[in-house]
Image (cartoon, rainbow, N blue to C red; front, side, top):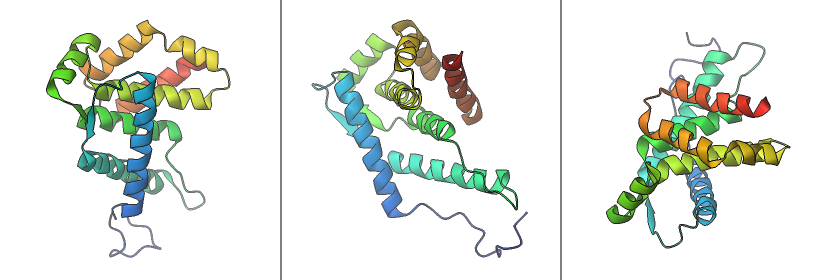
Length: 179
């Protein structure tokens, strides 16, 4: 139902501004550069599909609007949480796979890690987010041990999850840290 204070002409989804797309692209690539250095991938050239990065930004914006419309009431506007936003970025990175290596490098990477660079980047996003949020950094480092990372990457690569299930999965990882 359209709220009384919005007329039908105005009640249409509007794409994020070009500036918003550019800011997201900058965030995405700068975060990838941190990931790139962290994993010492310096000898592996990478390309980004900018159209897919823009699509990820648009999907996040659509979900932000969804939260404002469906979860708000007359007294209070509801915004999407940072956890959900990170989870959705990761979901779309895994689904769209906007980061690419040349085929030979991609095959070696997949053989070695049993995933693509996109799943590994999604894991890095979650790990970085939790590292920034939690006071106890050692708890985050200990949680993301090699075995847990392997299991998470396996789930990212081989499990079929909806957006909502993926949000719940990321939220449960956060819950595991709080125990």
